Amino acid sequence: MVEVIPCSLPDTQSQKEFDWNEENDINVPKVWGWLYPTRLHLKPLDLVNSTFTLGRSIDCDIVLNGQNITPNILKIVSKRHFKIYREDVDQSTIMYLEDCSYNGTFINGQRVGKGKKVILQNGDEISIGHPSVRVYVFKCICDSVHLPKEISSKYVVTRLLGTGACGEVKLVWNKKTCEKYAMKKIVKNKFMTILKKPQANDPARIMNEVKILKSLNHPCVIHMEDIVDTEDAVYIILELMEGGELFDRIVSFNLGIPEPDAKIIFYQIILAVYYLHQQGITHRDLKPENILLSENRPDTIVKVSDFGLSKFVNEETVLTTVCGTPMYVAPEILLTKGRGSYTKQIDVWSLGVILYVTLSGHLPFSQDDPKLTLAEQITKGIYTFPYSCFKNVSNTAIDLIKKILVVDPTKRLTVEEILKHPWFNDEILLSKVSRLIGSEHIVCDFGFNLDEEQVFEPNSKRLRICN
Image 1: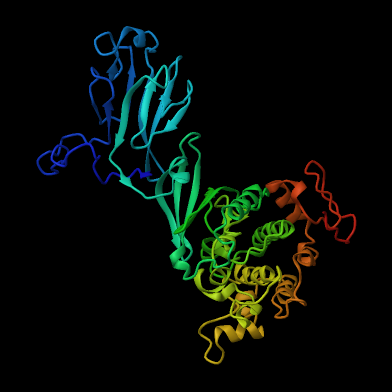
Image 2: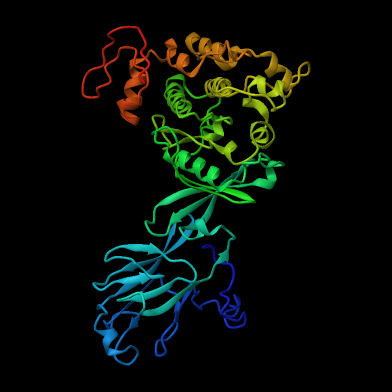
């Protein structure tokens, strides 16, 4: 696998031949790649300009004629058969091959298709007319990255998007479709302990889990394009969210996100968790860092990410040790030190902490309390609503937080009961969320008509959970 960052030299060339001297060769154009011929009379080409073409036309950078190619091959070559070009996208350099021919251009034996493009990777073989008519091997100045074949065969890895306690995230491009994704790499040795259950390394079990996670389909749940589980790491290919994390959105406000906007965000989170629970999945690590925004504006689609991680690594370490502090962890987990048997109510507690911090900009539990430890505050449910932080928050929202942050999980609101809470009895909210994700995904309606083409009018105050 290669990362397209100019850094090292191709293994077919000596250091001396391509070792540019910045001081003496200041005007020498920089090479970003090479085309090495696989046929006797073709010449190698240094890729210097942003675009290079090959074909029969004398305007091409590589002109194929009777002197460098046999007549039977020349007759299937178009005037402009293909072009190779580079683009700087999102602080990364991407190299493409575009097929301009009628008889086909092939990369590693796979036809590109007229008018279509693919991302070039170091070592790709280029053929014209037929997969067997190999003409060049593409080499780029690149830095190798050790990745499993399941990833390297499909994606080109580019720039780093972010890092955290649970791993790093990089921008990747699908080599065939040129679509962008986010790849999360979670190094297992950072989790201290790996799953030790007998069935942990069962390939059939792992593939079944992968199949379940990839099959999830909800507008407020991040789509997992692919998951690769190796001995050392888990690689997760996710749809790319350009709006960043909810955590960053909260930090950008002094005293929390304005309540109307926070309500739109939180309602979508609840819909996502409700859907996951229906599919038999408990998230286990809900926090603002795992809530992603589609766009950087108030009314945006919100998606829950990083669910199902405990299927691949030790559940205890996911819940407590790895993913930061236990600020969002339910009391029952701390009371049993992560060794107990839990219900999906652990997600509900985390939702309460998320709502608290989203509305106020502060966490309900503090590591700076001189009298009580953080664990004591959580396990005893000791928190307050400082006026300075909640002066602009409605009593209805505060009531919802109080009913979620209940130590006893059997007395804590369920996700279904959260959806029934009066705070969501808001036709403006339901109208906006309906426009964002579609009315068919609204789980509860309070009697409002969610047909976007009609006027919203409350018909009754009774909530209906739609199954």
